[in-house]
Image 1 (tube, rainbow, N blue to C red):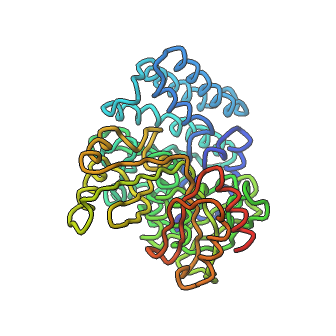
Image 2 (image 1 turned 30 degrees about the vertical axis):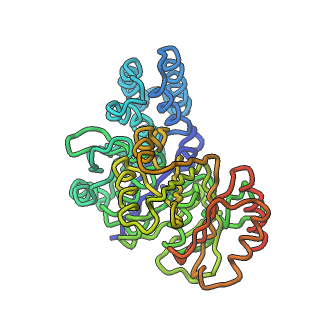
Image 3 (image 1 turned 90 degrees about the vertical axis):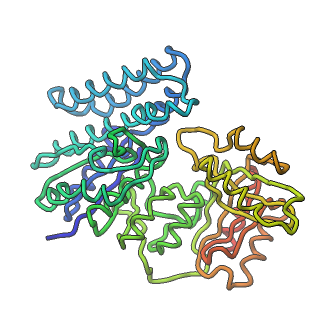
Length: 451
């Protein structure tokens, strides 16, 4: 019996009929029993988020009509008698009821309803994938509701999975796959123990796929996207960026964390913990190969790749009470923890501490990471400075702190641009620094040419 694989297809791979059929062709070539996990069709989740923020019925209706049109266009190549048209109509009817009721997304008590709203992107796209797969396959294709498989807590908008309960819920699915069943399910969504729909945060489809791979004891997770693997840096910035054939779990985790859009930052954790290989490839051009992420790749160069993460915030907290005092950092991080703020990089001096916060990734659904209530608590005992419009550049590799020539190269590439923060030493796999968004691309080009 061949081991189970999980294949995840992103939004661009689900963009239209031609793209979906290409994804089906990829799955049909797989010899292993494979669970398919899909994202919403390109552009749908953004429109659902916009609906949740909109205060006007006219705007919500316009966005809803655009979503319906995306799905209908994607289904247009299927025969009219195909059941998918009926399934989509039912889902659109349920969605329209929510659209008409959509409250302001800025009120935290509405997060639960917003998660239900956002779930419709994947619920529709999974039906589309199953319909096209059924056209190609001689075997019946089933749609499994991810909310009956993936169990989470009730942190709506950015839920955390319960791996043990998810494993229990996937027992029957594992048996079905081993017996040859063809199953497609949704990424991004799950269900709390109380039965409420939850989401794993923007980009969470990769994470969903990795969680389900772990729950199914899968051998490999295949992430199919719109690029042929992981590159030495963003090829849109450097035309000479090249794909990496292999990369270690540690290096890939750093790249995902520091801005490589191919992978979701959380997605590798279940794979690393369960020894699951991860492959990243192009859904339209699988023949181009891709990148295999392994515990121990064949080579471990000192510099592997460069990553950039935009929309970073630098929060500086200054207080003379820090001087020779104890408990200041504990008080600061207690406040950050109570407001569920994840800190990336930290540097300190005698009387100040500087923190980087990811406005793009720390909070789901477009909500700002910095609340006024949190800032007021900080201002009770310190001066607070906020800088935005920054980019975090990360040099990713192995044993970076043990090579004396790397740091000078980085500083030379950045000169004469002011570096707002630099961090090295906490990890042997990265050197990170913060610059303005306007200067970041030029610095990456200079670094890529040098390193």
